[in-house]
Length: 386
Image (cartoon, rainbow, N blue to C red; front, side, top):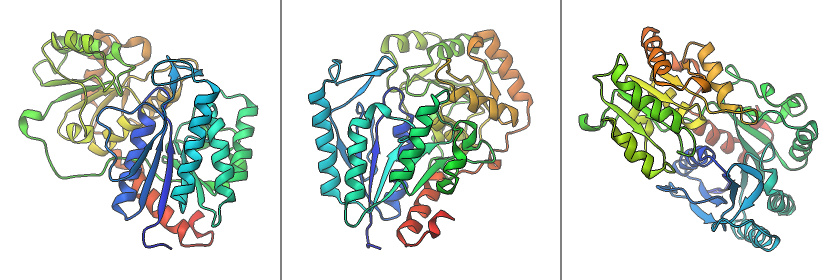
């Protein structure tokens, strides 16, 4: 094994920001453990982005067109043409060649990111042709997008068998098994390894009293969740915690005009905090969507919580996560159609009446387990699959 092995990590976010934040938590753990990390970053650069010591290659950006994943748009909002895609593909292949990684990790692919096959499939072919060939891993959250056509699931299996050494599932199979959202899991069971939830690095540091809040309401990246923010702002005065200190986190992509309106309710409104976990450590209650990273922060902080998942007939991940945690007595779920001030007040009452959640019942430290696993992979043999 090299004294400083190199990991090349591919991440592409199209709408939300969760994929990037989970990747960066893993990246930070890899850097702390002595890996050299290079990141291929294909989406719009996020505000407050922290590279954690990795070398980041920002590709010409591609995002979805207002959630329409069939159309990819460039940084100026125009539809990406063939020339734009070819340019990106060539950059990706050059990065692989110059990096010559020991390990290649693709975030979401091959279970997702089919829109990016124009560059990912050439990347995979080039990687398996390298001498020496890097170990190749898929990095996925615990709950995949449901409702795929059987042909797409079959394609994922075929791609895994052709290119990948293993699948790193960042979850606890005692909470939710990959089979819940991927029907062909039996065909790849020898490749699957559960790391636990990728929670933030724990710290004993406590925020100053002026920066502590009793109730923290958060809307993820800010592209979704405005209904919850306004319901919370209106609910404060009538809730059992009306005299408490409330903070609304509107997200890095929150609307500035709406932020001003929210501040008119007499709460603290912040667009972004670099460490949600520390803010939640001293909070009595978290009110949030049910995205992966927010839930990971809540788990690490040990906080009581209300989860109001954002979902529709295509996007069901947050709903399934909130339902699972509600059933375990770890969260109170506020259904999508009930994001109203009165319903939120009732949910607050129910949450405060429950025993403190036992978040330690869920396997965490997924970033550290990913590091351990990749070290074993580089040590040789198939021992890393055990």
